[in-house]
Length: 140
View 1 (cartoon, one colour):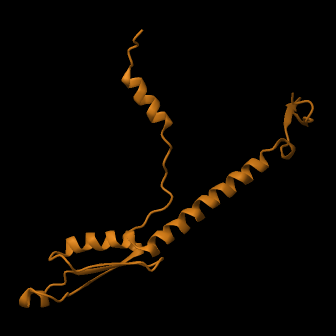
View 2 (cartoon, rainbow, N blue to C red; view 1 turned 90 degrees about the vertical axis):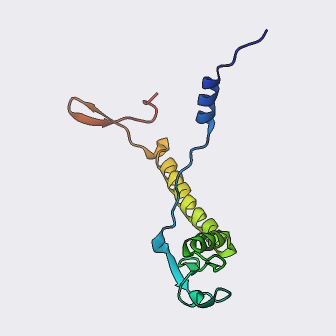
View 3 (tube, one colour; view 1 turned 90 degrees about the horizontal axis):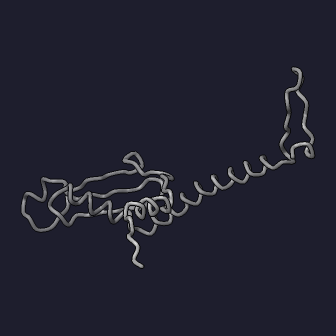
């Protein structure tokens, strides 16, 4: 017996199974120091007039990405940023930052779980305008 598969239902199930991704932190322009400089090499007098070399320094980790290979400053910025993200210092900083953020979240979750245990809760019921505490045995 051949069954027809409804692919729309399969896609919905796949979406539900996907792990929820959330942004832990971000790196902005404020976190970077972007330096431009004149780079030597072939090209005559034009090389001495344009600042096409780019160095990007991530202030917090100290990681550096540098490029002077292209003629365009824009292209060199892209290459320098890619080199920065591939540097060992930056990768270690990311691991450290992720651990700090997730550790704090796990610590908070553990504290909430601990506080929500039944022995830590006080349950009261209003009866005739008087609040009466329920015993642990009376809850069930």
